[in-house]
Image (cartoon, rainbow, N blue to C red; front, side):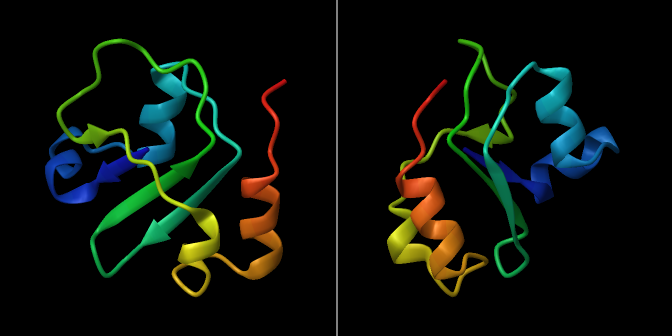
Length: 83
């Protein structure tokens, strides 16, 4: 899941706080300063209706090594099994 900070900034709350308030859990969060975003990996409890600044994305963590993820984190995300 992606949280775009430009659109989110008007709420005055941190992206991780918004996720908690919505009841969304996630394995790991990765800031993307170049894009002014946060990526949340392996999200659960995603509501049907999301604020416009949250977007579901499907990224291969192994292709994101060097973009906020190291190899170890990428492998954990890839191998994550929902509880």
